[in-house]
Amino acid sequence: GAGVSQSPRYKVAKRGQDVALRCDPISGHVSLFWYQQALGQGPEFLTYFQNEAQLDKSGLPSDRFFAERPEGSVSTLKIQRTQQEDSAVYLCASLRREGPNTEAFFGQGTRLTVV
Amino acid sequence: RKEVEQDPGPFNVPEGATVAFNCTYSNSASQSFFWYRQDCRKEPKLLMSVYSSGNEDGRFTAQLNRASQYISLLIRDSKLSDSATYLCVVNKGSSNTGKLIFGQGTTLQVKP
Image (cartoon, rainbow over all chains, first blue to last red; front, side):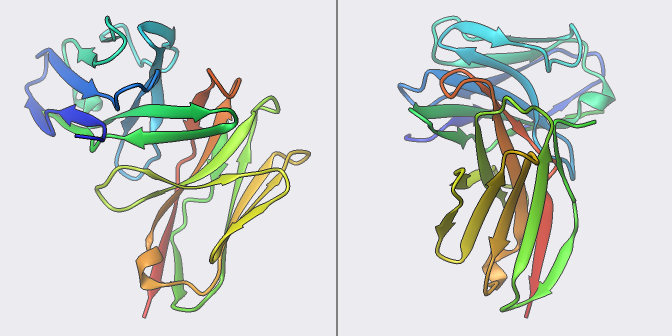
């Protein structure tokens, strides 16, 4: 498809389980972002990539969170030993940057529930 | 203090009303600014970019005040379909490599 694709759409994990969330960005988009969105809040920055390089991971809440984009296209966000506070929607966005014009295209998100 | 701050609302207005949302940002080096719209349980989508000179798109007008680090969005003649959460977004860093920082969002409910 032409948009950003995320999978799975929904994930229920038992506390302590590891999860992997996938993002397939729009072809040709160099920049890829991960955000975490809790109910009633705006998207909180986690990390971002320029091609395969992870330029900023300052938003990752703990060392249980890890993201990669090995070939500069598909990205995976991994959460180890999930905790209840990890429950949120995880949004991926790929960016079109044309000079000063920037537009982020978001996937539909993965809703993670840790029980 | 959050890097991008918005009044979460909700703003409840009748159809046809004019409503304004404000946003402040903390990083004076921020390069570019946007308003995104997010419908309930949907992903955010770009509403409009915000330019230094101010810009208008139909019923929507965006303004930027760099000195006060303040961004606004004005919606005229509100429609029921305008009900959504409006997210203020700041590009922190260069236009080519900066990261997008989102505010908490302001919720608008337009009533018949």
